[in-house]
Structure formats: C-alpha cells, structure tokens
Image (tube, rainbow, N blue to C red; front, side, top):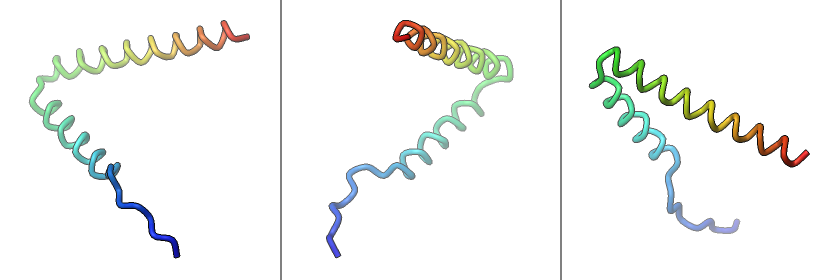
Length: 60
C-alpha cells in the first residue's frame, strides 16, 4: 500500500470547534439579539443568492 501524507487540516475538529464556539456565542445572546443575528445572516445569504443568480443571467 502507498503511504498517505499526514493530515495538515482536520476538518472534523475544525467543524466541532466552530459549532461549539457558535453555540457559546448564541447562548450568550438574548432572544432579541439572536433574532437580529439570524436576520442579518438571512440578509447576507439572500444577497449572495441574488448575486449568484445575476451572474448566471449575465453568462446566458
């Protein structure tokens, strides 16, 4: 068998760390702060979708 090089990035550990950090941040927020945070994320996501759709239309 061919030896594989050692991992330089552990995606599972990175994902776990992100989830735990995000959970702590959200737990520290009040309900109103969480709702504002989620609304901000939705607005950002909607902008990215619109940008993606616009770029597809320009290519057509």
